[in-house]
Length: 341
Ligand SMILES: Nc1ncnc2c1ncn2[C@@H]1O[C@H](COP(=O)(O)OP(=O)(O)OP(=O)(O)O)[C@@H](O)[C@H]1O
Ligand SMILES: O=P(O)(O)OC[C@H]1O[C@H](OP(=O)(O)OP(=O)(O)O)[C@H](O)[C@@H]1O
Image 1 (cartoon, rainbow, N blue to C red):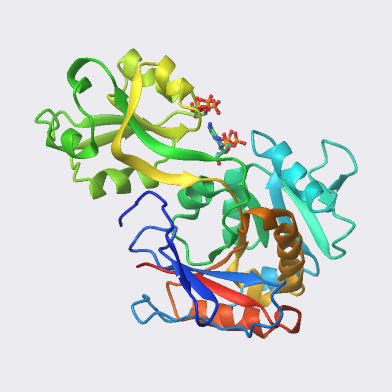
Image 2: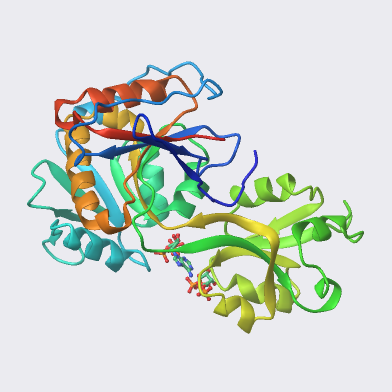
Protein backbone atom coordinates (compact mmCIF):
# COMPACT_ATOMS: atom_id res chain seq x y z
CA UNK A 1 0.00 0.00 0.00
CA UNK A 2 1.23 3.43 -0.84
CA UNK A 3 0.95 6.04 1.87
CA UNK A 4 1.29 9.42 0.27
CA UNK A 5 1.00 12.97 1.55
CA UNK A 6 -2.52 14.24 1.46
CA UNK A 7 -2.73 16.76 -1.30
CA UNK A 8 -6.27 16.90 -2.54
CA UNK A 9 -6.58 18.55 -5.94
CA UNK A 10 -10.16 19.53 -6.46
CA UNK A 11 -11.36 19.82 -10.02
CA UNK A 12 -14.71 21.26 -10.90
CA UNK A 13 -17.14 19.45 -13.18
CA UNK A 14 -18.84 22.62 -14.29
CA UNK A 15 -21.80 21.24 -16.18
CA UNK A 16 -23.12 19.16 -13.34
CA UNK A 17 -21.90 21.53 -10.64
CA UNK A 18 -19.91 18.67 -9.25
CA UNK A 19 -16.31 18.40 -8.39
CA UNK A 20 -13.94 15.61 -7.63
CA UNK A 21 -10.44 15.39 -6.40
CA UNK A 22 -7.67 12.95 -5.75
CA UNK A 23 -8.40 10.97 -2.66
CA UNK A 24 -7.11 11.91 0.73
CA UNK A 25 -6.24 8.30 1.04
CA UNK A 26 -3.39 6.15 -0.18
CA UNK A 27 -3.59 5.25 -3.83
CA UNK A 28 -4.40 1.64 -3.27
CA UNK A 29 -7.18 2.40 -0.87
CA UNK A 30 -10.46 3.35 -2.44
CA UNK A 31 -12.23 5.93 -0.43
CA UNK A 32 -14.83 8.08 -2.09
CA UNK A 33 -15.69 11.47 -0.72
CA UNK A 34 -19.17 12.79 -1.31
CA UNK A 35 -19.90 16.37 -0.53
CA UNK A 36 -23.41 17.34 0.41
CA UNK A 37 -24.38 20.95 0.10
CA UNK A 38 -27.81 21.35 1.65
CA UNK A 39 -27.98 25.01 0.80
CA UNK A 40 -28.06 24.40 -2.95
CA UNK A 41 -31.62 23.24 -3.31
CA UNK A 42 -31.92 23.65 -7.06
CA UNK A 43 -29.39 20.94 -7.77
CA UNK A 44 -30.48 17.38 -8.11
CA UNK A 45 -28.44 14.81 -6.29
CA UNK A 46 -25.93 13.20 -8.60
CA UNK A 47 -23.36 10.59 -7.80
CA UNK A 48 -20.21 10.61 -9.93
CA UNK A 49 -19.01 7.09 -10.48
CA UNK A 50 -15.53 6.26 -11.60
CA UNK A 51 -15.01 3.13 -13.57
CA UNK A 52 -11.55 2.64 -12.15
CA UNK A 53 -12.82 2.43 -8.59
CA UNK A 54 -11.85 -0.79 -6.90
CA UNK A 55 -15.16 -2.38 -6.15
CA UNK A 56 -15.55 -5.53 -4.17
CA UNK A 57 -18.49 -7.55 -3.00
CA UNK A 58 -20.59 -6.09 -0.21
CA UNK A 59 -20.43 -7.85 3.09
CA UNK A 60 -24.08 -7.99 3.95
CA UNK A 61 -23.73 -9.08 7.57
CA UNK A 62 -25.57 -7.03 10.11
CA UNK A 63 -23.95 -6.23 13.42
CA UNK A 64 -26.78 -6.89 15.81
CA UNK A 65 -25.40 -4.51 18.42
CA UNK A 66 -25.83 -1.64 16.01
CA UNK A 67 -29.46 -2.40 15.30
CA UNK A 68 -30.36 -3.16 18.92
CA UNK A 69 -29.59 0.28 20.30
CA UNK A 70 -32.15 3.07 20.14
CA UNK A 71 -29.77 5.95 20.57
CA UNK A 72 -27.02 7.14 18.26
CA UNK A 73 -23.59 7.27 19.89
CA UNK A 74 -21.01 9.96 19.22
CA UNK A 75 -17.47 9.51 20.59
CA UNK A 76 -15.55 12.63 21.59
CA UNK A 77 -11.95 12.84 22.86
CA UNK A 78 -11.98 12.55 26.64
CA UNK A 79 -8.65 14.30 27.09
CA UNK A 80 -5.59 15.47 25.26
CA UNK A 81 -5.16 18.22 22.74
CA UNK A 82 -8.30 17.42 20.74
CA UNK A 83 -10.70 17.50 23.68
CA UNK A 84 -11.41 21.15 24.30
CA UNK A 85 -11.20 22.20 20.64
CA UNK A 86 -13.80 19.57 19.82
CA UNK A 87 -16.20 20.91 22.43
CA UNK A 88 -15.50 24.43 21.17
CA UNK A 89 -16.34 23.42 17.61
CA UNK A 90 -19.61 21.83 18.68
CA UNK A 91 -20.43 24.89 20.73
CA UNK A 92 -19.81 27.04 17.67
CA UNK A 93 -22.33 24.82 15.90
CA UNK A 94 -24.87 25.46 18.67
CA UNK A 95 -24.43 21.92 19.90
CA UNK A 96 -23.82 22.16 23.63
CA UNK A 97 -22.43 19.04 25.23
CA UNK A 98 -23.99 18.62 28.67
CA UNK A 99 -22.00 16.50 31.08
CA UNK A 100 -23.54 15.77 34.47
CA UNK A 101 -20.05 15.95 35.97
CA UNK A 102 -16.57 15.96 34.43
CA UNK A 103 -15.76 12.42 35.59
CA UNK A 104 -18.78 10.96 33.89
CA UNK A 105 -17.95 9.77 30.43
CA UNK A 106 -21.47 10.00 29.07
CA UNK A 107 -23.14 13.27 28.10
CA UNK A 108 -25.93 14.58 25.96
CA UNK A 109 -26.50 17.26 23.39
CA UNK A 110 -30.00 18.65 24.03
CA UNK A 111 -30.34 19.78 20.42
CA UNK A 112 -29.94 16.16 19.21
CA UNK A 113 -32.56 14.19 21.07
CA UNK A 114 -31.56 10.61 20.29
CA UNK A 115 -27.82 11.18 20.65
CA UNK A 116 -25.53 9.95 23.41
CA UNK A 117 -22.05 11.42 23.70
CA UNK A 118 -19.34 9.13 25.03
CA UNK A 119 -15.95 10.55 26.00
CA UNK A 120 -13.13 8.23 25.02
CA UNK A 121 -9.43 8.37 24.13
CA UNK A 122 -9.11 9.09 20.38
CA UNK A 123 -7.67 5.69 19.49
CA UNK A 124 -10.48 4.02 21.44
CA UNK A 125 -13.06 6.03 19.51
CA UNK A 126 -11.77 4.47 16.30
CA UNK A 127 -11.65 1.00 17.83
CA UNK A 128 -15.22 1.36 19.14
CA UNK A 129 -16.49 2.55 15.77
CA UNK A 130 -15.11 -0.64 14.33
CA UNK A 131 -16.60 -2.79 17.06
CA UNK A 132 -20.02 -1.20 16.65
CA UNK A 133 -20.01 0.39 20.10
CA UNK A 134 -19.97 3.92 18.65
CA UNK A 135 -21.65 5.23 15.51
CA UNK A 136 -19.87 8.55 15.03
CA UNK A 137 -16.68 10.09 16.35
CA UNK A 138 -14.47 13.14 16.14
CA UNK A 139 -10.73 12.43 16.13
CA UNK A 140 -7.61 13.34 14.16
CA UNK A 141 -7.27 11.90 10.67
CA UNK A 142 -3.94 10.40 11.77
CA UNK A 143 -5.78 8.38 14.43
CA UNK A 144 -8.37 7.14 11.94
CA UNK A 145 -5.60 6.11 9.56
CA UNK A 146 -3.47 4.37 12.17
CA UNK A 147 -6.12 2.60 14.19
CA UNK A 148 -8.66 2.18 11.38
CA UNK A 149 -6.04 0.23 9.43
CA UNK A 150 -7.87 0.74 6.17
CA UNK A 151 -11.02 -0.92 7.51
CA UNK A 152 -13.82 -0.58 4.99
CA UNK A 153 -16.41 0.22 7.62
CA UNK A 154 -14.98 3.64 8.41
CA UNK A 155 -16.40 6.61 6.55
CA UNK A 156 -15.02 10.12 6.80
CA UNK A 157 -18.18 12.12 7.13
CA UNK A 158 -16.28 15.41 7.28
CA UNK A 159 -12.59 15.45 6.51
CA UNK A 160 -11.68 19.02 7.44
CA UNK A 161 -12.95 20.35 10.74
CA UNK A 162 -10.22 22.96 10.67
CA UNK A 163 -8.39 22.24 13.91
CA UNK A 164 -5.85 19.74 15.19
CA UNK A 165 -3.65 20.37 12.18
CA UNK A 166 -0.43 18.39 12.09
CA UNK A 167 1.44 16.00 9.84
CA UNK A 168 2.84 12.54 10.37
CA UNK A 169 6.41 12.93 9.31
CA UNK A 170 9.63 11.00 9.13
CA UNK A 171 12.66 12.75 10.67
CA UNK A 172 16.37 12.06 10.94
CA UNK A 173 19.23 13.74 12.81
CA UNK A 174 20.79 16.73 11.11
CA UNK A 175 24.25 15.53 12.16
CA UNK A 176 26.52 12.51 11.69
CA UNK A 177 25.84 10.15 8.79
CA UNK A 178 22.56 11.94 8.07
CA UNK A 179 24.05 15.41 7.75
CA UNK A 180 23.77 15.52 3.97
CA UNK A 181 20.69 13.34 3.58
CA UNK A 182 17.83 15.43 2.26
CA UNK A 183 15.27 12.97 0.95
CA UNK A 184 13.73 9.55 1.48
CA UNK A 185 15.36 8.51 -1.77
CA UNK A 186 18.82 9.42 -0.49
CA UNK A 187 18.07 7.67 2.79
CA UNK A 188 17.03 4.50 0.96
CA UNK A 189 20.25 4.60 -1.06
CA UNK A 190 22.51 4.70 1.97
CA UNK A 191 24.64 1.54 2.13
CA UNK A 192 24.39 1.32 5.92
CA UNK A 193 21.03 -0.45 6.09
CA UNK A 194 21.35 -4.20 5.91
CA UNK A 195 19.50 -7.20 7.32
CA UNK A 196 22.07 -7.37 10.09
CA UNK A 197 22.06 -3.63 10.76
CA UNK A 198 18.66 -2.22 9.80
CA UNK A 199 17.55 1.38 10.04
CA UNK A 200 16.02 1.80 13.50
CA UNK A 201 12.86 3.89 13.58
CA UNK A 202 11.06 4.96 16.75
CA UNK A 203 7.34 5.55 16.25
CA UNK A 204 3.94 5.18 17.81
CA UNK A 205 2.53 4.54 14.34
CA UNK A 206 3.22 0.86 14.03
CA UNK A 207 0.65 0.32 11.29
CA UNK A 208 1.43 3.27 9.02
CA UNK A 209 5.18 3.28 9.69
CA UNK A 210 6.13 -0.06 8.15
CA UNK A 211 3.88 0.56 5.14
CA UNK A 212 5.49 3.92 4.53
CA UNK A 213 9.03 2.64 4.77
CA UNK A 214 8.31 -0.23 2.41
CA UNK A 215 6.69 2.15 -0.03
CA UNK A 216 9.87 4.19 0.01
CA UNK A 217 12.05 1.24 -0.83
CA UNK A 218 13.52 0.76 2.64
CA UNK A 219 13.53 -2.95 3.27
CA UNK A 220 15.88 -3.20 6.20
CA UNK A 221 14.02 -1.33 8.90
CA UNK A 222 13.27 -2.17 12.50
CA UNK A 223 10.73 -0.30 14.59
CA UNK A 224 10.63 0.52 18.26
CA UNK A 225 7.76 2.21 19.99
CA UNK A 226 7.17 4.51 22.94
CA UNK A 227 4.26 6.55 24.24
CA UNK A 228 5.93 9.94 23.97
CA UNK A 229 9.10 12.02 23.69
CA UNK A 230 10.15 10.03 20.64
CA UNK A 231 12.41 12.88 19.52
CA UNK A 232 14.85 11.84 22.24
CA UNK A 233 15.41 8.39 20.74
CA UNK A 234 18.16 9.26 18.20
CA UNK A 235 20.22 11.27 20.71
CA UNK A 236 19.81 8.47 23.24
CA UNK A 237 21.14 5.99 20.68
CA UNK A 238 17.90 4.02 20.70
CA UNK A 239 16.91 4.84 17.11
CA UNK A 240 18.34 6.31 13.91
CA UNK A 241 15.15 8.11 12.96
CA UNK A 242 11.64 8.82 14.15
CA UNK A 243 8.17 8.88 12.65
CA UNK A 244 5.91 11.17 14.64
CA UNK A 245 3.43 14.01 14.49
CA UNK A 246 4.76 17.46 13.78
CA UNK A 247 2.91 20.74 13.95
CA UNK A 248 5.14 23.75 14.68
CA UNK A 249 8.36 21.77 14.14
CA UNK A 250 9.80 23.09 17.38
CA UNK A 251 10.28 19.70 19.02
CA UNK A 252 12.21 18.40 16.01
CA UNK A 253 14.41 21.49 15.87
CA UNK A 254 15.13 21.44 19.59
CA UNK A 255 16.27 17.84 19.29
CA UNK A 256 18.48 18.38 16.23
CA UNK A 257 16.19 16.45 13.92
CA UNK A 258 15.03 17.37 10.41
CA UNK A 259 12.24 16.38 8.07
CA UNK A 260 13.26 15.31 4.58
CA UNK A 261 11.77 15.41 1.12
CA UNK A 262 9.14 12.73 0.63
CA UNK A 263 8.99 12.08 4.36
CA UNK A 264 5.43 13.23 5.08
CA UNK A 265 3.20 10.20 5.54
CA UNK A 266 0.00 12.18 5.88
CA UNK A 267 -1.45 15.56 6.72
CA UNK A 268 -3.97 15.52 9.50
CA UNK A 269 -6.71 17.56 11.08
CA UNK A 270 -9.82 16.78 13.05
CA UNK A 271 -12.42 14.75 11.15
CA UNK A 272 -15.93 13.44 11.76
CA UNK A 273 -15.89 9.72 11.16
CA UNK A 274 -18.72 7.21 11.09
CA UNK A 275 -19.25 3.52 10.94
CA UNK A 276 -20.73 2.70 7.56
CA UNK A 277 -22.73 -0.08 9.16
CA UNK A 278 -24.20 2.41 11.62
CA UNK A 279 -25.16 4.86 8.90
CA UNK A 280 -26.93 2.12 7.03
CA UNK A 281 -28.47 0.25 9.93
CA UNK A 282 -28.61 2.25 13.15
CA UNK A 283 -31.98 3.92 13.59
CA UNK A 284 -31.64 7.69 13.43
CA UNK A 285 -27.91 7.65 12.60
CA UNK A 286 -28.32 9.12 9.15
CA UNK A 287 -30.62 11.92 10.28
CA UNK A 288 -28.39 12.76 13.23
CA UNK A 289 -25.34 12.77 10.99
CA UNK A 290 -27.13 15.04 8.58
CA UNK A 291 -28.11 17.40 11.36
CA UNK A 292 -24.51 17.60 12.60
CA UNK A 293 -23.26 18.10 9.04
CA UNK A 294 -25.69 20.92 8.43
CA UNK A 295 -24.49 22.68 11.52
CA UNK A 296 -20.85 22.10 10.60
CA UNK A 297 -21.62 23.44 7.14
CA UNK A 298 -23.15 26.55 8.61
CA UNK A 299 -20.10 27.07 10.79
CA UNK A 300 -17.47 26.23 8.19
CA UNK A 301 -19.23 27.89 5.27
CA UNK A 302 -16.61 30.59 5.08
CA UNK A 303 -13.97 28.09 4.03
CA UNK A 304 -16.38 25.92 2.10
CA UNK A 305 -15.20 22.59 3.35
CA UNK A 306 -18.12 20.20 3.59
CA UNK A 307 -17.50 16.64 2.71
CA UNK A 308 -18.93 13.20 3.17
CA UNK A 309 -16.63 10.35 2.41
CA UNK A 310 -17.66 6.85 1.64
CA UNK A 311 -15.16 4.06 1.62
CA UNK A 312 -15.06 2.74 -1.92
CA UNK A 313 -13.44 -0.61 -1.44
CA UNK A 314 -16.62 -2.28 -2.53
CA UNK A 315 -19.80 -1.67 -4.41
CA UNK A 316 -21.27 -0.99 -1.00
CA UNK A 317 -19.91 2.53 -1.26
CA UNK A 318 -22.34 3.18 -4.08
CA UNK A 319 -25.02 1.75 -1.90
CA UNK A 320 -24.06 4.06 0.90
CA UNK A 321 -24.09 7.03 -1.46
CA UNK A 322 -27.47 6.08 -2.84
CA UNK A 323 -28.83 5.44 0.59
CA UNK A 324 -27.59 8.76 1.90
CA UNK A 325 -28.99 10.59 -1.09
CA UNK A 326 -32.30 8.80 -1.04
CA UNK A 327 -33.09 10.18 2.40
CA UNK A 328 -35.92 12.71 2.12
CA UNK A 329 -34.05 15.00 4.48
CA UNK A 330 -31.07 15.02 2.12
CA UNK A 331 -32.89 15.64 -1.12
CA UNK A 332 -31.71 18.41 -3.38
CA UNK A 333 -28.11 18.23 -2.37
CA UNK A 334 -25.07 18.86 -4.46
CA UNK A 335 -22.69 15.95 -4.34
CA UNK A 336 -18.96 16.15 -4.71
CA UNK A 337 -16.95 13.01 -4.99
CA UNK A 338 -13.27 12.60 -4.53
CA UNK A 339 -11.48 9.66 -5.97
CA UNK A 340 -8.04 8.73 -7.17
CA UNK A 341 -6.91 10.61 -10.25
N1 LIG B 1 1.77 18.61 17.58
C1 LIG B 1 0.91 17.62 17.73
N2 LIG B 1 1.32 16.51 18.32
C2 LIG B 1 0.49 15.48 18.51
N3 LIG B 1 -0.80 15.48 18.12
C3 LIG B 1 -1.25 16.56 17.51
C4 LIG B 1 -0.42 17.68 17.29
N4 LIG B 1 -1.14 18.61 16.69
C5 LIG B 1 -2.37 18.11 16.51
N5 LIG B 1 -2.44 16.86 17.00
C6 LIG B 1 -3.64 15.99 16.99
O1 LIG B 1 -3.96 15.66 18.32
C7 LIG B 1 -4.06 14.26 18.46
C8 LIG B 1 -3.43 13.86 19.76
O2 LIG B 1 -4.36 14.09 20.71
P1 LIG B 1 -4.16 13.49 22.17
O3 LIG B 1 -2.94 14.06 22.76
O4 LIG B 1 -5.44 13.63 22.87
O5 LIG B 1 -4.10 11.98 21.89
P2 LIG B 1 -2.99 10.93 21.93
O6 LIG B 1 -1.73 11.51 22.45
O7 LIG B 1 -3.00 10.27 20.60
O8 LIG B 1 -3.64 9.97 22.95
P3 LIG B 1 -2.95 9.01 23.88
O9 LIG B 1 -2.40 9.86 24.98
O10 LIG B 1 -4.06 8.13 24.25
O11 LIG B 1 -1.88 8.30 23.09
C9 LIG B 1 -3.31 13.66 17.31
O12 LIG B 1 -3.85 12.40 16.98
C10 LIG B 1 -3.45 14.70 16.23
O13 LIG B 1 -4.59 14.42 15.47
O1 LIG C 1 5.92 20.20 16.07
P1 LIG C 1 5.58 20.50 17.47
O2 LIG C 1 4.66 21.67 17.61
O3 LIG C 1 6.79 20.67 18.33
O4 LIG C 1 4.74 19.27 18.06
C1 LIG C 1 5.18 17.96 17.91
C2 LIG C 1 5.28 17.24 19.21
O5 LIG C 1 4.01 17.27 19.87
C3 LIG C 1 3.62 15.94 20.17
O6 LIG C 1 4.08 15.55 21.39
P2 LIG C 1 3.28 15.89 22.71
O7 LIG C 1 3.37 17.35 23.01
O8 LIG C 1 1.91 15.33 22.60
O9 LIG C 1 4.12 15.13 23.78
P3 LIG C 1 4.63 13.63 23.76
O10 LIG C 1 5.88 13.61 22.94
O11 LIG C 1 4.89 13.31 25.17
O12 LIG C 1 3.55 12.80 23.15
C4 LIG C 1 4.30 15.11 19.10
O13 LIG C 1 4.41 13.76 19.51
C5 LIG C 1 5.62 15.79 18.97
O14 LIG C 1 6.53 15.34 19.92
